[in-house]
Image (cartoon, rainbow, N blue to C red; front, side, top):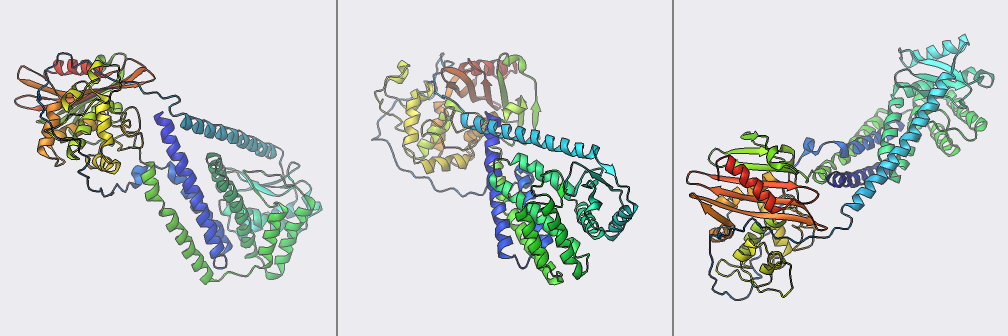
Length: 595
């Protein structure tokens, strides 16, 4: 579930970034058509390749942080008139280990993510197979290519290489499997012409072909072909990417044509254009080898290339400067997406925990049959002791442990007060007798009465609740789930490390809440006292489709000399509940001599 959720985020980012970049490039090409040289019209597409790479780069490389300002909290929505309530600030309950929960139904959790991920993978596999077939065709062409024997043609090829200042060995040959000249090969490059080409091509035609193909080699267009194919596989779902790469290939051929014309005398321009037309007449439907550079193309593409050749004039230095400036403008547009990508790609499923005062230890013997984590913070030593580093920063639903902060937010909003925390029973019959009566904060916390805290949530403005969560940095601060339900195996998630940090912040009131409200919450979560040590905390159980999959126990132990904050989370396909998490925690605390 976690993996597919992350995938969906990157899927959406990839679609938005690629589509936006293509739109910007097309707009720049249209607006600055007369100011852009052919070479730089092609170079603009490299900005697309950069943009397509961005969603795959870790957001840690460009993390701009979160500078959202929070709105003020609305201190309204107070419940009824105050009534006198007798409270036992220290709940002595030998049965506090019993955890109360109600299962939520999730018919197909994460179904959409799984379908999208599966469809994308299927598309990638299909295109990968087609690419492998294309590569095998190239391999077949290579094996059926014979070296040129015509010494005059070989001498011409070497002269063209010298004109372009190319010294590396390039294989030149002919093959019965090609109808149009093409260039391929990353490590061992081949320039291949149709068999018996010298029977219908003049030496000038052959010269123009060599200059064209060697320009592809000079400007690393073979490598670019492979990059295009890779990105086309990854972004197969975006039709704009297919269109963009089609335009990019055409712009590359035009840029190559112009590069050839820059090497020729003016009277040769028409002859070069006729060479292209010659192949259109001979090959009405050219084969598309995606991993090669081909001289020929569709009639529509050849028409555009001929128009560019016919209107060709030598590019001035001013145009070159304008082209560079326009390219840099496009680069600014691409760079402007980086903060957007950073925010969207931020991994909200995990907490970025950094502390030099951390000891990782093996407590797996306590977690037999469960995946889980234990986090302990020693306040006096300012030290964390953690079991299972990976799970300690993984955010999962807080379930009933969230009720600690739900109570605090309700007190701060004056929905309830320290003097009056009573709420009338709504009359709905629940599976626990302790729920089917009026409740105050202490009984509701003791018996983990869901309806009490759901009603608190509903009486706080959603914007105010969001502001509270942002203020204290509660996990992923995601309130997208239903009000009163978002903390029950829904959108809100938090890691064990964050649970401990927030308990410590609550205990010391680092967030500047009203002292009496903080004290009321602390009183409500006191569990038992023995041997001069006070235990406070809250259990939580996540039940989905009648299976207990997520168990919590968080809290702290106060001694005369120190305070220890802890959080235990366990997960399983079933039988992972708050009671079991509490038993594991007590065993660890006992063996450590803390409680």
